[in-house]
Amino acid sequence: MSRECYLTGKKNLVVNAVTRRGKARAAGGVGRKVTGVTKRTQKANLQKKAIREQGVEKTVWLSAHAIRTLEKGGFPGVELA
Image (cartoon, rainbow, N blue to C red; front, side, top):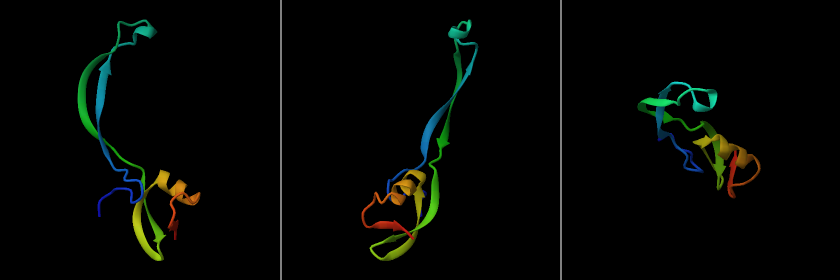
């Protein structure tokens, strides 16, 4: 089972962590310089929840956004168990 939202498809992203040095020009310096760029993962806010879909109860990964939408009744045919 992959860590991906069952309803919205949200999953982890690979992003760059940019390391900088120096003082910003607006703060009276000569500007910020990039000294390193490394890859890191930005994790989706996923939680395991039980849902009922067409009468069948199953445990799935849901994003926090999907949980809030479910509470409002935003996904037809799916409800929190």
